[in-house]
Image (cartoon, rainbow, N blue to C red; front, side, top):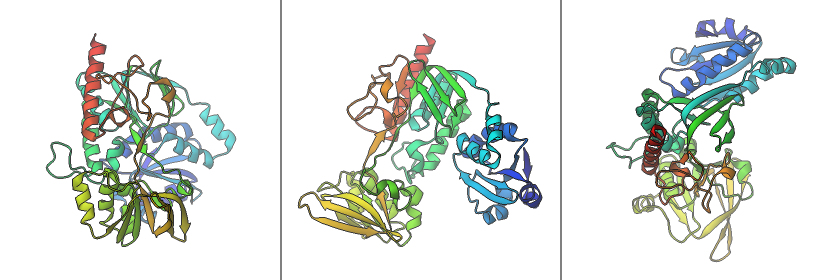
Length: 423
């Protein structure tokens, strides 16, 4: 593996045969997460493919000419031709391998992968999930000198990372961008000494034996497990939603609101998230129509007052979506009034769906006791029905789900685990 500059790009990349190029930056957690994967794969594929790294901050003109606007970004070349996927952000090992395999003959790819040797790592505690609950648990455990590893299929931060402003987290006078609060928490836990394995594929979870497999080759064993996988946006499950996800329908205002400057937007939902995110979207959009199934909003009073006072926001109550379809570059939402049965179609440049969350238990749902909504049951120490397995954050069955309650859960679980290990 070699670090090059823009001056060497033509010779090393365009004339370099089969090449994988990593554009990285300093003070970049996703870059830190990618680095060991990129280096490890360079050792495996290095005889067939050239692995190069370019410091994006010192080579901005080159990066911009290649439409590389974030770090890390990995691109692939075959004899000077750009091929494969442009990978960025929390890059998974499996996505790198898929693109590397596409550069070489299938039999050679098979031969290389046969050289990958399974590994086993052992820790006192495994934290599965890197939201505020998992990060807090990691912080308390490492301060107690407990050998802990935090594993996440994404980058640390959870839903917090994609929340545009957080105004109710203690200790900050001004509202904090979610990604920055996530960064502060993550760095604090990392500096303390917790091990991170993030942006990985979790291929198997065995709670009874407290073992997981990541990236299909590394087995992680622990004496205790803390589940902190959180929750994900709930879908409406109406016709057209799946097909238009990411192509007219979004579930993240922080990610996509900026694309609707001076455009019309539909927001589905009436809870805190829907109303607060609608207010954020109004910074960009010219008109917002909120469609809600009840006759009044469920959001907190402050958010409601702000929304009702916003001239860009209109409300349609007692109405549910029945389907989505594309009309050119716009989205049509077929709806039904729950009181009258009247059918109406609304059209806008895009739609945002905020109708609640679902617990992320797919990897272990059959191994643990949950409530009627699928959230994991625990006692006051955060212990589940499985011996040595704890649960924190939005994944846990409880009345209120906030960053502060997740942090509290993580604190309790870590102290409980520490005492169990000491005894």
